[in-house]
Length: 224
Image (cartoon, rainbow, N blue to C red; front, side, top):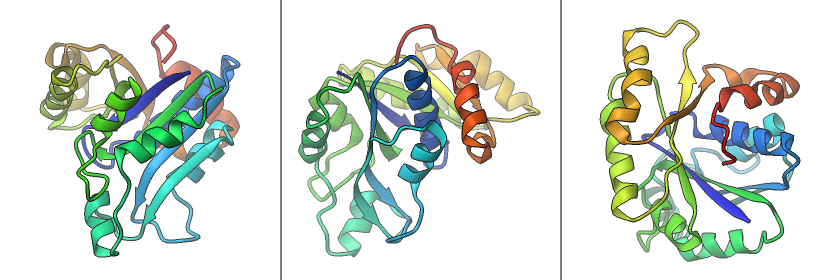
């Protein structure tokens, strides 16, 4: 079983859509895929959330959400405001290990790599370390991306965590100068390749069109 964590350089960069694209790409190869979302914030009980988007777009039904919190805050903060502990790295790792038998398990983070998930201070980096997971970094196309992506990749390297590369999570139909420079310069700043670009608005596609596109948006030949 391969485990891949998806970390954003910030919130709102398109992690969920990239997670769905990676799941669809693996499913198209005939792999048994599961997705784990350790913490979802800003979504109330009964409302559609990230796991629902992943399931709808990728066609992967083996999708698991561990903690849902109503306020749109960092998970540890939102949990504390609700009088809850959030979720620990060990609890997340245990949930992933229970999925033994899958070819690939994708673990979608909440916010950035070092955002605290619970009161014990656990982060997605801690989860990846416990599971020996590779970490795909998702960045946006706008200003600030080079610095945020470089810092994220430096944090991964400092912890000895593997990073296959960076995916741009919302590539515009008409890229401006900043987006084009990011595409060119990200490998130099991060030391990692750009694995692909998921187009802006991909999450609004019909599932069939999304599934077909996912095989082209993530351009690396290596299985992730």
